[in-house]
Length: 169
Image (cartoon, rainbow, N blue to C red):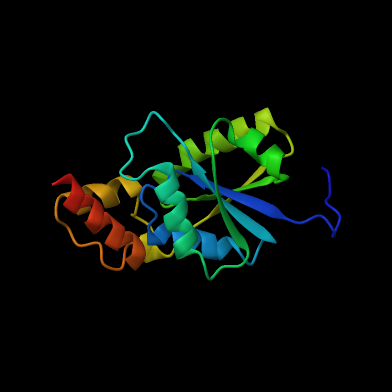
């Protein structure tokens, strides 16, 4: 195993679509910040999904929500995560595990990423219990059906969701 010297910054990447960012995401980011010198929140530009917000809007929302976290940087990417990590000099992926059902898919991704670049390690963090059921898909679905997301998404994100729905009507 290769050891990093103390002078090499420990950069972690927390990838996702973040459409929209919710408090479970923020919780994982906040848990990662004390562990790493820098956490890069990497917003995936996934053209196969039908996003509520554009890639630029998601990056902007995350930057607003994370403004008080000096160890965080938000950046978009497309393509393979390991290629993006090589570009920025990161070796650690942070992923959230909400439930046992997440483990199989996350484990497969971690092994594939390690296969693509043996220097890459994945660290799994668990969110606070009150966020353990949250997903962006579920958040959007509940909101679009008129459900209350107060306390589940950052206030700035909730406001943007309300604006978006007004424009869609």
